[in-house]
Length: 620
Image 1 (spheres, rainbow, N blue to C red):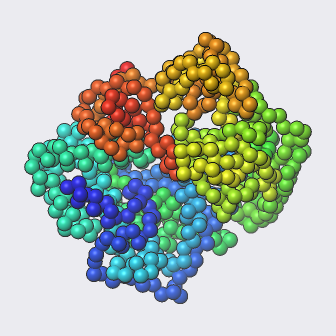
Image 2 (spheres, rainbow, N blue to C red):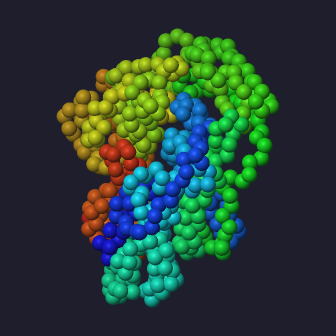
Image 3 (tube, helix red, strand yellow):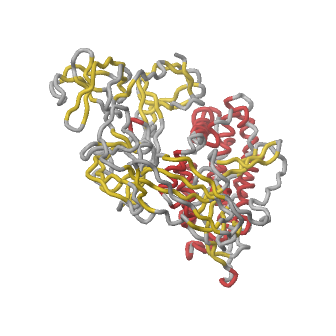
């Protein structure tokens, strides 16, 4: 059974959950069919030059109808290509929208930039699946758009059905006989429609296995896919009682319709001749069905109404992104000219007049940003936990990234100059950089020249340029005294006789709270002096100001697995629902991989378990 599932996963796309775009060659490699690929006449094709992208959304249907659900909250209906490519603008934009709690804002921006970068040349009558097929060259021989789309959604259906079955078993709404019946009546026919090989359909059939195997092995497979699904933002807030209303087959069939709909449904022509891309495409063609019978999928972009002029917002910020004066809003008729003006701001000098200081009103909102530099000498150091907005970390100091950041080849940030992204990580796993110098972008924005000092990572030693915006990078060492600090390093920290951290005295385990007498400097780092006169690191990745609490005991809400490693890849025990466990500590997965996000795990006797609140609950 497990080998059959593994083969099935290998044969299908690696996708964003429940949809998205993947390289079709992955799917072609392990599938077979004797259908013929569709072709499109070259003279029918047009190039969709993208001028704006709608904020990504998904469609969710229920008995109350079909609802567009944004992936992020608080964002405008769309952003222009110019705005998305402007790192300084987007840095401030994301910082100004802290109300977004649904998804990582930088990840959403990346998805929208991906749409901009992958410009399409295709017939308006083609579907997205047609376009992928036509772009694949010889790898697409033997496929139709429909068979390709079905293959790409096969894995999603399997995981959905598994999770759906797990919830029904957990709530005791189904037993083994019900699962066998549901598979025969619903899952098997759907797998057949999605072109799953008969060998997989047979191997996946729960009716072929005795009750003992069902309880010991199949139930774990269902549970594993449920756990994976609950990690996704779309499902993390959906209760099990709601989840049982999900219709896996209709969900996938409706996504299939989106893959096969004409591309013209997803592009709206703008007055300047460019196109605005539907947020449904940016959201990965995701459609979840929670019970609406035979829903009608609406045209993602209805017949365009005449374009209306959108306002131009004029902002005034310093070279760290701090607002220096109230913004202004300019309005006017479509295609008429606007003119913005700089301000005289005491103590600051205009770095450079923005390129769009003068322009025309369009159907998309625009922003003009005037950047200023503080006159006089910058001060290094601060008494606060983080340095002031107009203060740079001194050369030789270590900073770490508190949000997703890019390392660039030059001080002028652009997609072309990007060397790599460092995703947002939990505090103990944040990437660190030593400041080796400074530079200024062509727009007058200050940058750090840095070296990656994450010694256990594959990125160690990389050099480049990093933002100096304190909302994204900040010194890794505390600069001010705090009354108490808590040890957060999973392996604990030591105290020492000297501020050079020599002469080891006492080891403090994770979770211990210590009283601080003062903070002292040691070259470009700092140390906490404890109440007993001993010295301890002031590194924010190892200790945290104040008292940090974690559960002392948890109870499993569902049957889960225990693992010997924090990434939960080496299972060493299966734990039943209702098992109580003492929490010895905590850690986060993917500690040294800055391409992947990390997830909280609890350290218990014998290994690590998930900290997902849907699967475990705090007892005390």
